[in-house]
View 1 (cartoon, rainbow, N blue to C red):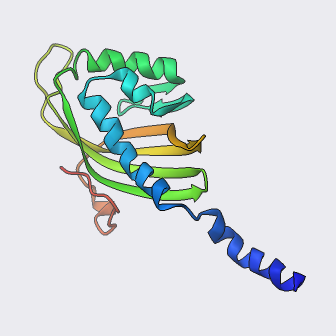
View 2 (cartoon, rainbow, N blue to C red; view 1 turned 180 degrees about the vertical axis):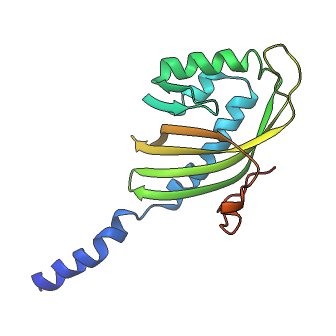
Length: 168
């Protein structure tokens, strides 16, 4: 009997480690919209409360922030300046559990109403964000984020179908 139990644990262990509740999946699927909602309120602090204290976040321009202080300072600045009239929207979301308390969340977005440093309107743009979220005390928080602007498709990738398409 012990041998049978041992083999069951070996066989089922990896799948059980990634088993999640419907509430976890719903919370993770809602994380991009919560990020976008705070963005659309132009609320740097509202973005920050979605992150871990030692968050690592890389912007579309390659600016790497470490920790909530820099994350909030940066987002408060841009949301009060060149993104103060911007509106952002989620296009699609994909959640993948990596462990019971760790998941990747990819989402595509589109932003309008941004301006350049001189205040001139910029055309709408889109991209894809990847978040690593960790569950702490029952709440999913962003541990790592990487934001990427969309770009025209290149020939070497035309036959590869992405799970989430970036709007041109």
